[in-house]
Length: 150
Image (cartoon, rainbow, N blue to C red; front, side, top):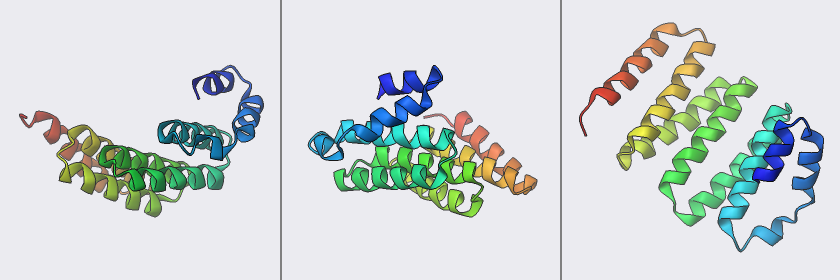
C-alpha cells in the first residue's frame, strides 16, 4: 500500500491504480489487515482522482470487513473515512449519517480522539451547508472535549 501511495504522490496516479487493480482481492482475504489497507489506499486514490462512487464502494467494503471483525475502533475510523468521501462528493446528509455513527461508537467506547474527528467532520458538513451556527456549536463541543480532564 505504501509503495502505491508513493507512486501516486510522485505523480504516477495511473500506474498506482493499475497496480492496485491488478492485485487479486482473494489473495488478501486471509490477511484482513492487508485487505483493509488495500481497500483504504484504493479508496483514497479513487477519491483523489474524482472517482467518488468507486471510493465510496471501497470504503463500504472496508466497513463491512471491519464490522465482521468486530473492531469498534477501526469501525469508527472507517465510518469517518466514508463520511469524508461523501463530504468531498458533496453529499452532506450522507456524510452526516456516517459521522453520527462514528460519534456514537466513539462515545460508547469513550474514544475522545474519535469523538473529535467525528465532530470535526460534522462541523465541516454543516459549514458546507452554510449552517454556521451549528458549525460553531460543534466547534465549541470539540473545544470542551479537549478541556475535559481524563
